[in-house]
Image (cartoon, rainbow, N blue to C red; front, top):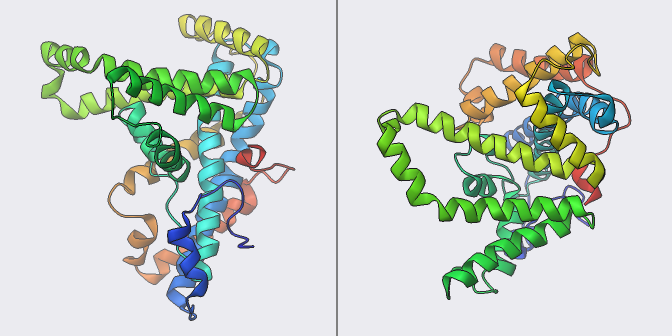
Length: 325
C-alpha cells in the first residue's frame, strides 16, 4: 500500500508509478525540502482557505430557505474555491509526501479558474481523472473518429458518466450532463462567437477579451457547481430561483450573514491570495521562485504560512470533499 496515494488521486498510471517501487531512493535533502514545502502549501489551501470557506458554504447550502439573494451567490462562488482548494490541497499534500520519499506523482491541477473556456478548464481540473476518462472511455468509444454525431454522443456520454462517478444522486447526473452540454454548445457556436468578437472589435484588445472569457467560464462553472452542491433537487430549484432574483436585486437579503464579518473578510482575502499565487505560477511554480530569494526571505515566508495555518486555520471536524466520491 502506497499511503500518499489514496482514493481521491492523483490517479497514476502503472507505467509511471510501478517501476518507481523497484528503484533505489537515496536521501536527498533538496528533494525532501521541496516535498515538505509542497505539503505546507497544500495544508494552507485545505485548512486556511477551503475549511474557512466551508463554514459559510455549509451554513447557507444546508438551509438554503433561510437565505436570500447575495448570500446564495456568495456561497456558490465560495464553494467553487472551497472544492478547488480542498481537492488541490489534498493533491499537493499527496504529491509532496511522495516526493519526500523519492516518488514522482503527476500534477493534478493547473490553475483551472484561469481557463478561457470549459474545454480548457477540464484540461486543468483533476487532470489525472480527466485524462483517464479520455484514454479509457472516450477513445475506446471512437473519440473524434467516425461521424460528427458519434463524436457529440461520445463527448456527452463521457461527461454523463463522470457525473455518475461522483455519486448516484440526480444532482451529480445533471451536473455531468450540463458540463457535456457546455462543451457541445461551445463547439456548435465557435464560428458565431469568433465572428461576433471580430465585428465588435474586441479582438483588438486581447487582454480584455481574455478577461471576459475567463469571467464567463468561471460563471458557468459556478452555475454547474450550484447543482453539484445542492443537497436535493428541491434545494437546487429553490437556490436557482433565488440566485436569479439575487442577480436582479443583489442587495436584497444582505442584512444577515452566516459568519462574522472578520471571517468573511478572511475568506475573501484567502481567495484573492490563491488567485494571485496561481497567476504568479503561470510560468514557474512558487517553490522555484522562492528558491531564488535570500534565505531570510524564504524562511520568513515559510514561517508566515505555518503561523497562518495555526492562527487562521479552521480546525473543526472536516473531511476532504473528494473522499466521499
